[in-house]
Length: 356
Image 1 (cartoon, rainbow, N blue to C red):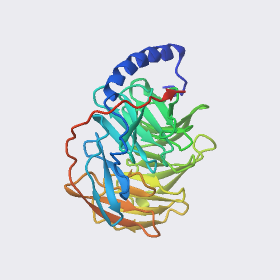
Image 2: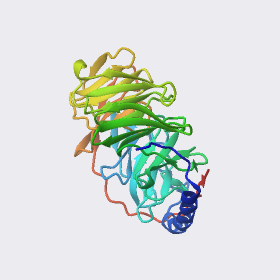
Image 3: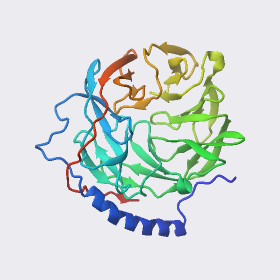
Image 4: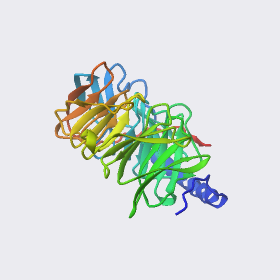
Protein backbone atom coordinates (compact mmCIF):
# COMPACT_ATOMS: atom_id res chain seq x y z
CA UNK A 1 0.00 0.00 0.00
CA UNK A 2 1.43 3.36 -0.96
CA UNK A 3 2.13 5.66 1.99
CA UNK A 4 1.47 9.32 1.46
CA UNK A 5 1.28 12.67 3.17
CA UNK A 6 -0.54 15.47 1.44
CA UNK A 7 -2.27 18.76 1.89
CA UNK A 8 -5.99 18.24 1.52
CA UNK A 9 -6.97 18.09 -2.13
CA UNK A 10 -9.22 20.72 -3.65
CA UNK A 11 -12.23 18.42 -3.51
CA UNK A 12 -11.57 17.48 0.13
CA UNK A 13 -10.91 21.10 1.04
CA UNK A 14 -14.23 22.21 -0.46
CA UNK A 15 -16.03 19.39 1.34
CA UNK A 16 -14.35 20.22 4.64
CA UNK A 17 -15.09 23.92 4.16
CA UNK A 18 -18.80 23.24 3.71
CA UNK A 19 -18.85 20.85 6.65
CA UNK A 20 -16.96 23.35 8.80
CA UNK A 21 -19.49 26.08 8.03
CA UNK A 22 -22.33 23.89 9.25
CA UNK A 23 -20.28 22.69 12.22
CA UNK A 24 -19.38 26.23 13.27
CA UNK A 25 -23.04 27.18 13.33
CA UNK A 26 -24.09 24.25 15.48
CA UNK A 27 -20.97 24.31 17.64
CA UNK A 28 -21.47 27.97 18.49
CA UNK A 29 -24.66 27.00 20.28
CA UNK A 30 -22.84 24.42 22.39
CA UNK A 31 -19.93 26.67 23.33
CA UNK A 32 -22.20 29.64 23.97
CA UNK A 33 -22.58 28.38 27.54
CA UNK A 34 -18.87 28.84 28.26
CA UNK A 35 -17.04 32.09 29.01
CA UNK A 36 -13.98 33.20 30.91
CA UNK A 37 -14.56 33.40 34.63
CA UNK A 38 -14.90 36.87 36.10
CA UNK A 39 -12.41 38.32 38.58
CA UNK A 40 -14.83 37.32 41.32
CA UNK A 41 -14.16 33.70 40.36
CA UNK A 42 -10.35 33.38 40.68
CA UNK A 43 -10.24 29.62 40.12
CA UNK A 44 -6.90 28.28 41.33
CA UNK A 45 -5.28 31.71 41.65
CA UNK A 46 -3.20 31.86 44.81
CA UNK A 47 -3.17 28.08 45.26
CA UNK A 48 -0.10 25.97 44.58
CA UNK A 49 -0.71 23.34 41.91
CA UNK A 50 1.53 20.33 41.28
CA UNK A 51 -0.16 19.64 37.95
CA UNK A 52 -3.36 18.41 36.33
CA UNK A 53 -4.73 15.08 35.19
CA UNK A 54 -7.61 13.83 33.13
CA UNK A 55 -10.40 12.15 35.07
CA UNK A 56 -10.73 8.37 34.89
CA UNK A 57 -13.63 8.81 32.45
CA UNK A 58 -11.47 10.97 30.18
CA UNK A 59 -14.17 13.65 30.11
CA UNK A 60 -12.75 16.17 32.57
CA UNK A 61 -9.65 17.57 34.26
CA UNK A 62 -8.72 17.67 37.94
CA UNK A 63 -5.99 19.80 39.57
CA UNK A 64 -3.38 18.29 41.89
CA UNK A 65 -3.44 20.96 44.57
CA UNK A 66 -0.55 21.63 46.96
CA UNK A 67 3.17 20.96 46.69
CA UNK A 68 5.10 17.77 45.95
CA UNK A 69 4.83 15.52 49.00
CA UNK A 70 1.83 17.40 50.41
CA UNK A 71 -0.85 17.49 47.77
CA UNK A 72 -4.24 16.08 46.92
CA UNK A 73 -6.36 15.67 43.82
CA UNK A 74 -8.94 18.43 43.76
CA UNK A 75 -12.48 18.50 42.41
CA UNK A 76 -13.08 18.33 38.68
CA UNK A 77 -12.78 21.77 37.08
CA UNK A 78 -16.00 23.35 35.87
CA UNK A 79 -15.17 24.98 32.52
CA UNK A 80 -18.80 25.90 31.96
CA UNK A 81 -19.09 23.38 29.15
CA UNK A 82 -19.94 19.68 29.28
CA UNK A 83 -17.00 17.75 27.80
CA UNK A 84 -17.04 14.43 26.02
CA UNK A 85 -13.23 14.18 26.09
CA UNK A 86 -10.36 16.11 27.67
CA UNK A 87 -6.57 15.89 27.74
CA UNK A 88 -3.80 17.79 29.57
CA UNK A 89 -0.81 19.31 27.76
CA UNK A 90 2.67 18.66 29.18
CA UNK A 91 4.03 21.82 30.84
CA UNK A 92 1.77 23.93 28.68
CA UNK A 93 -0.73 25.32 31.18
CA UNK A 94 -3.62 24.25 29.01
CA UNK A 95 -5.76 21.32 27.97
CA UNK A 96 -7.87 20.43 24.97
CA UNK A 97 -11.48 19.39 25.29
CA UNK A 98 -14.26 18.18 23.02
CA UNK A 99 -17.75 19.57 23.66
CA UNK A 100 -20.08 16.71 24.55
CA UNK A 101 -23.11 18.06 22.68
CA UNK A 102 -21.53 19.39 19.49
CA UNK A 103 -18.12 17.73 19.20
CA UNK A 104 -16.38 21.11 18.88
CA UNK A 105 -12.72 21.18 19.93
CA UNK A 106 -11.82 23.86 22.49
CA UNK A 107 -8.71 25.14 24.27
CA UNK A 108 -8.98 24.96 28.07
CA UNK A 109 -7.04 27.52 30.13
CA UNK A 110 -6.18 25.59 33.30
CA UNK A 111 -5.03 28.54 35.42
CA UNK A 112 -8.25 30.52 34.93
CA UNK A 113 -10.42 27.40 34.68
CA UNK A 114 -12.05 28.70 31.51
CA UNK A 115 -12.59 27.91 27.86
CA UNK A 116 -10.01 30.08 26.08
CA UNK A 117 -11.01 29.47 22.46
CA UNK A 118 -12.99 27.28 20.12
CA UNK A 119 -10.94 25.81 17.26
CA UNK A 120 -11.87 25.83 13.58
CA UNK A 121 -11.11 22.13 13.32
CA UNK A 122 -13.22 19.11 12.38
CA UNK A 123 -15.49 17.84 15.15
CA UNK A 124 -14.87 14.82 17.38
CA UNK A 125 -11.20 13.91 16.89
CA UNK A 126 -10.34 10.30 17.67
CA UNK A 127 -7.08 11.28 19.36
CA UNK A 128 -5.75 14.41 21.04
CA UNK A 129 -1.95 14.60 20.86
CA UNK A 130 0.64 16.94 22.35
CA UNK A 131 4.26 17.55 21.52
CA UNK A 132 6.72 16.69 24.36
CA UNK A 133 6.82 20.26 25.69
CA UNK A 134 3.20 21.02 24.87
CA UNK A 135 4.23 23.78 22.46
CA UNK A 136 1.93 22.37 19.78
CA UNK A 137 -0.98 19.95 19.78
CA UNK A 138 -2.49 17.72 17.11
CA UNK A 139 -5.92 16.25 16.39
CA UNK A 140 -6.10 12.88 14.67
CA UNK A 141 -9.19 11.71 12.78
CA UNK A 142 -9.49 8.05 11.84
CA UNK A 143 -11.83 8.81 8.94
CA UNK A 144 -9.62 10.03 6.14
CA UNK A 145 -6.48 9.41 8.23
CA UNK A 146 -6.20 13.15 8.80
CA UNK A 147 -4.11 15.05 11.31
CA UNK A 148 -4.47 18.77 12.12
CA UNK A 149 -1.70 20.61 13.97
CA UNK A 150 -2.75 23.27 16.51
CA UNK A 151 -0.17 26.03 16.97
CA UNK A 152 0.16 28.66 19.74
CA UNK A 153 -2.65 27.07 21.78
CA UNK A 154 -2.78 29.65 24.58
CA UNK A 155 -1.85 32.66 22.47
CA UNK A 156 -3.59 33.05 19.13
CA UNK A 157 -4.32 29.43 18.26
CA UNK A 158 -4.39 28.43 14.60
CA UNK A 159 -5.14 25.09 12.97
CA UNK A 160 -3.03 23.88 10.05
CA UNK A 161 -4.57 22.38 6.98
CA UNK A 162 -5.03 18.64 7.36
CA UNK A 163 -2.23 16.20 6.61
CA UNK A 164 -3.07 12.73 5.40
CA UNK A 165 -1.21 10.13 7.44
CA UNK A 166 -1.78 6.69 5.99
CA UNK A 167 0.19 3.48 5.73
CA UNK A 168 0.07 -0.32 5.55
CA UNK A 169 -2.53 -1.23 8.14
CA UNK A 170 -4.23 0.37 11.11
CA UNK A 171 -2.67 3.27 13.01
CA UNK A 172 -1.66 2.15 16.50
CA UNK A 173 0.35 5.16 17.68
CA UNK A 174 1.01 8.74 16.55
CA UNK A 175 3.45 11.37 17.86
CA UNK A 176 4.32 14.95 16.93
CA UNK A 177 7.55 16.87 17.51
CA UNK A 178 7.77 20.22 19.32
CA UNK A 179 8.52 21.91 15.99
CA UNK A 180 5.10 20.82 14.74
CA UNK A 181 6.54 19.87 11.35
CA UNK A 182 7.37 16.21 11.95
CA UNK A 183 4.94 13.37 12.69
CA UNK A 184 5.70 9.74 13.49
CA UNK A 185 3.08 7.01 13.05
CA UNK A 186 3.02 3.25 13.61
CA UNK A 187 0.84 0.92 11.56
CA UNK A 188 -0.22 -2.64 12.35
CA UNK A 189 -1.13 -5.30 9.79
CA UNK A 190 -1.13 -9.08 9.49
CA UNK A 191 2.54 -8.96 8.55
CA UNK A 192 3.54 -7.08 11.72
CA UNK A 193 4.15 -3.39 12.32
CA UNK A 194 5.88 -0.55 10.51
CA UNK A 195 6.82 2.99 11.50
CA UNK A 196 6.83 5.94 9.09
CA UNK A 197 7.66 9.63 9.44
CA UNK A 198 5.52 12.33 7.82
CA UNK A 199 6.38 15.92 6.96
CA UNK A 200 5.84 18.46 4.19
CA UNK A 201 8.57 16.59 2.30
CA UNK A 202 6.46 13.44 2.19
CA UNK A 203 6.46 10.08 3.93
CA UNK A 204 9.53 8.08 4.84
CA UNK A 205 9.87 4.52 6.07
CA UNK A 206 11.63 4.41 9.46
CA UNK A 207 11.73 0.84 10.75
CA UNK A 208 9.86 -2.46 10.93
CA UNK A 209 8.56 -3.65 14.30
CA UNK A 210 6.39 -6.32 15.87
CA UNK A 211 3.85 -4.52 18.07
CA UNK A 212 4.29 -0.79 18.59
CA UNK A 213 2.34 0.40 21.63
CA UNK A 214 3.80 3.88 22.06
CA UNK A 215 5.71 6.60 20.16
CA UNK A 216 7.21 9.72 21.75
CA UNK A 217 9.53 12.46 20.55
CA UNK A 218 12.21 13.89 22.80
CA UNK A 219 11.73 17.54 23.81
CA UNK A 220 12.83 20.12 21.23
CA UNK A 221 14.25 17.56 18.80
CA UNK A 222 13.43 15.13 16.01
CA UNK A 223 14.67 12.16 18.05
CA UNK A 224 12.00 9.68 19.15
CA UNK A 225 11.46 6.54 21.20
CA UNK A 226 9.50 3.55 19.91
CA UNK A 227 8.07 1.11 22.44
CA UNK A 228 7.81 -2.29 20.74
CA UNK A 229 5.95 -4.64 23.09
CA UNK A 230 6.08 -7.53 20.63
CA UNK A 231 9.88 -7.49 20.46
CA UNK A 232 10.31 -6.31 24.09
CA UNK A 233 12.43 -3.41 22.84
CA UNK A 234 12.82 0.33 23.30
CA UNK A 235 14.12 1.75 20.02
CA UNK A 236 15.76 5.17 19.67
CA UNK A 237 15.42 6.92 16.30
CA UNK A 238 17.64 9.97 15.83
CA UNK A 239 16.96 12.69 13.23
CA UNK A 240 13.52 11.37 12.28
CA UNK A 241 12.70 12.15 8.67
CA UNK A 242 16.24 13.22 7.83
CA UNK A 243 19.27 10.93 8.00
CA UNK A 244 17.43 8.70 10.47
CA UNK A 245 19.44 6.24 12.55
CA UNK A 246 17.69 3.42 14.42
CA UNK A 247 19.16 1.77 17.52
CA UNK A 248 17.78 -0.60 20.18
CA UNK A 249 18.58 0.92 23.58
CA UNK A 250 16.84 -1.65 25.81
CA UNK A 251 15.55 -5.17 25.19
CA UNK A 252 14.87 -8.54 26.79
CA UNK A 253 18.61 -9.20 27.14
CA UNK A 254 18.87 -6.18 29.39
CA UNK A 255 15.95 -7.43 31.48
CA UNK A 256 13.10 -5.60 29.77
CA UNK A 257 9.79 -7.47 29.94
CA UNK A 258 6.51 -6.38 28.31
CA UNK A 259 7.34 -2.67 27.86
CA UNK A 260 4.39 -0.29 28.20
CA UNK A 261 5.85 3.08 27.30
CA UNK A 262 9.03 5.16 27.30
CA UNK A 263 9.40 8.95 27.55
CA UNK A 264 12.58 10.99 27.22
CA UNK A 265 12.81 13.89 29.65
CA UNK A 266 15.84 15.68 28.23
CA UNK A 267 17.05 13.79 25.17
CA UNK A 268 19.69 12.01 27.24
CA UNK A 269 17.66 9.93 29.67
CA UNK A 270 14.22 8.32 29.56
CA UNK A 271 11.75 6.70 31.89
CA UNK A 272 10.66 3.22 30.81
CA UNK A 273 7.58 1.43 32.13
CA UNK A 274 7.34 -2.33 31.79
CA UNK A 275 6.04 -5.40 33.57
CA UNK A 276 9.14 -5.14 35.77
CA UNK A 277 8.26 -1.64 36.98
CA UNK A 278 10.03 1.65 36.22
CA UNK A 279 13.57 2.19 35.02
CA UNK A 280 15.56 5.32 34.23
CA UNK A 281 17.47 4.67 31.03
CA UNK A 282 20.66 6.31 29.77
CA UNK A 283 20.00 6.64 26.04
CA UNK A 284 23.69 6.82 25.15
CA UNK A 285 24.88 3.72 27.01
CA UNK A 286 21.68 1.74 27.56
CA UNK A 287 22.40 1.56 31.29
CA UNK A 288 19.21 1.33 33.33
CA UNK A 289 18.55 2.24 36.95
CA UNK A 290 15.49 0.88 38.72
CA UNK A 291 13.07 3.37 40.25
CA UNK A 292 11.24 2.09 43.32
CA UNK A 293 7.58 2.59 42.51
CA UNK A 294 5.51 1.08 45.34
CA UNK A 295 2.68 0.98 42.81
CA UNK A 296 1.53 -0.78 39.67
CA UNK A 297 2.38 1.66 36.86
CA UNK A 298 0.07 1.49 33.88
CA UNK A 299 0.83 4.73 32.04
CA UNK A 300 3.18 7.69 31.83
CA UNK A 301 1.00 10.76 31.40
CA UNK A 302 2.39 14.26 31.84
CA UNK A 303 0.50 16.28 34.45
CA UNK A 304 1.25 19.73 33.07
CA UNK A 305 4.58 20.27 34.82
CA UNK A 306 8.10 19.46 33.61
CA UNK A 307 9.20 15.88 34.30
CA UNK A 308 6.15 14.97 36.37
CA UNK A 309 4.02 12.02 35.28
CA UNK A 310 0.87 10.26 36.40
CA UNK A 311 1.80 6.58 36.64
CA UNK A 312 -1.44 4.79 37.41
CA UNK A 313 -5.01 4.69 36.29
CA UNK A 314 -7.33 6.30 38.81
CA UNK A 315 -7.45 3.96 41.77
CA UNK A 316 -9.75 4.44 44.77
CA UNK A 317 -8.14 6.67 47.33
CA UNK A 318 -4.70 7.34 45.82
CA UNK A 319 -2.73 8.01 42.65
CA UNK A 320 1.02 7.74 42.08
CA UNK A 321 3.12 10.51 40.54
CA UNK A 322 6.66 10.23 39.24
CA UNK A 323 8.51 13.46 39.99
CA UNK A 324 11.74 13.73 38.00
CA UNK A 325 12.11 17.50 38.42
CA UNK A 326 14.67 17.26 41.23
CA UNK A 327 18.13 15.78 41.58
CA UNK A 328 16.63 12.41 42.49
CA UNK A 329 13.55 10.68 41.13
CA UNK A 330 10.67 10.45 43.58
CA UNK A 331 7.40 8.56 43.64
CA UNK A 332 4.70 10.61 45.33
CA UNK A 333 1.44 9.04 46.48
CA UNK A 334 -1.39 11.57 46.32
CA UNK A 335 -4.80 11.20 48.00
CA UNK A 336 -7.57 11.21 45.42
CA UNK A 337 -11.31 10.84 45.21
CA UNK A 338 -13.34 9.96 42.12
CA UNK A 339 -14.42 13.04 40.17
CA UNK A 340 -17.96 14.07 41.01
CA UNK A 341 -20.50 14.81 38.29
CA UNK A 342 -20.63 18.47 37.33
CA UNK A 343 -23.61 20.75 37.01
CA UNK A 344 -22.29 23.03 34.28
CA UNK A 345 -22.97 26.73 34.80
CA UNK A 346 -23.84 29.06 31.93
CA UNK A 347 -21.02 31.19 30.51
CA UNK A 348 -20.49 33.26 27.40
CA UNK A 349 -18.83 31.87 24.30
CA UNK A 350 -15.05 32.47 23.82
CA UNK A 351 -13.50 33.83 20.66
CA UNK A 352 -12.86 31.23 17.98
CA UNK A 353 -9.43 30.63 16.50
CA UNK A 354 -8.62 30.67 12.80
CA UNK A 355 -7.41 27.95 10.48
CA UNK A 356 -4.22 28.55 8.56
